[in-house]
Amino acid sequence: MADLKFTKATDQEHEIKLDSHLISASWLFGMVYTGQNAKFEIRTVFVGNGAKVKATGKSEKGKKLGKVKGEMLNNVFVGAFEIPEKIDLDDQVYFEVELPDNGLNGESAKVPVYPTPKIKSIKWSAAEARRGEVLTLSAELENVRDGADAKLVIYEFDQDGAHDKISELMATIKGSKIEEKWEYEYFEDTDELPTSEEILRYGGTYNPPEYFFVIKIGELELGKAKQDSGLLQFKDWLEIKMLDNTGQEVCNVKYKVTLPDGSERKGSIGPQGFAREERIPPGRCLVEFEDSGGTQSST
Image (cartoon, rainbow, N blue to C red):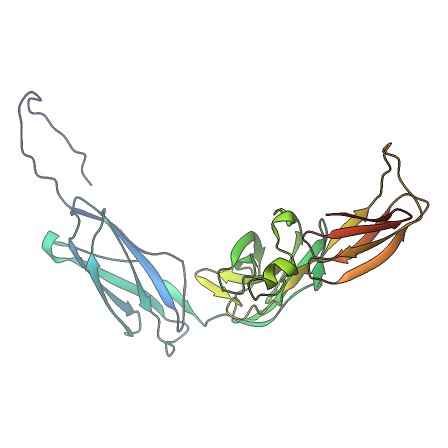
């Protein structure tokens, strides 16, 4: 594109004509998959909002991908072609661009066609996790290239389907397999988790935080619809102490803990001055102490 030059006086109004240009026509990823949508992007300058644009998808071997029509907005247009299931895997696809009102046309680069990757297996190394534990996320895949990049995306499960993304791990596919380590940390405030009693007021049930992960290769996100990795549950722990009026630890006292899911545990504080309950559902707990004076409660 030529440099813009303006040599007229600046103390008067002038009308100048700016030439339109097609800057780029490109696929958003360097490959496409059979049976999937492949996104593309067209960029221009000085064509104006609403300028008509048409993209025609083709393959080197003459396969037609169809046409996508639309209008430019802020000199950008994003669209997608559906890649046919029945297309040769050694074929390459490209698209032609036309902006008829601006007299512009062009062609994208060619990208290879690959079969859609599939999951053979995907799993966590454990069914439960506590703060600071290191878990292994592993998967075995089909129709993938050795050395290809992938992402492991971890979500917090929501029964309504509004899953929250927690973390992303970069991975490399080796021998059709992925294996990455992840240190679990619970960042939310467990005090905000409702108890089973609070949820039952609204006809629900207590659900502890649960997590699943998916594999993302290019535009594809595999394993999300049915949470194929399985759900990882967060289990917490509780340390129990009882102090007297002087702040000293009280030993040899029995307690009862009502857990967030409504279940109960009983135990006693031994001579060490504390007790610890492991693998409990996270949230607010009710602790009751028994002594000669009756029962004391705390949360």
